[in-house]
Image 1: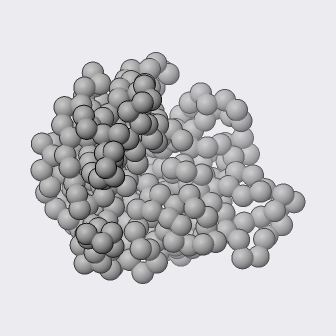
Image 2 (image 1 turned 120 degrees about the horizontal axis):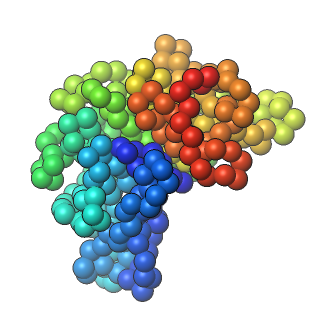
Length: 298
């Protein structure tokens, strides 16, 4: 699903083969104008899979993905796309596989993923969070996999069988830090631009409800894709779904609980695409993907 990142609404095609023409990355500005449409590719690839994309305030787009050859070789990468749509830089990150990413406040790129050994197993003592500078140089590596109690790979899901398969992490940016929403690890993590850990907060999922609004024992509400926002005031919000419908929740760090946002029903049930300062960028309504910026009442 689309997400608001930097100054763009971003969308990508998960997978394309060399036989399938067309772009795999698109960006729209806040007026709804398509401003970027490009194909991120590797010359010798048979297939390219995109895991995540992020936008910078300067108009660049970062793409995390993997290229596959006909022989089955898999090469994970991060690509930097200029505002004109040209891939200005692509870095092979193997054995690290970047699965989710964002731009930091200083223009660097942060990626969450895992290191895989030659047998395809995750290396538990290697960092899951990497920072790259504007030239694609690895600056630092943080958060070893072994520090996560609940996830094999904190960037992926499901991890929690009750939560469901839609478990890819979401990385978000504020002026002085990045936030990591790991669904499989059930953790919210904040790191500053210098790589210092600000905090880690474990959380539990809210109970699911059936179509009558009654609790369903043993089942949990699910975040809709990357429908989360990290507001300038520090609020962490997400749109959850269950058979009873959609609802915006706010993370209470102290208790580790997601609490329903007391807002007008037409706002509280909308899907969010991200934060733009203290505003939350949301869909206009059911079946209408037009954007609105919500500043209050949420």
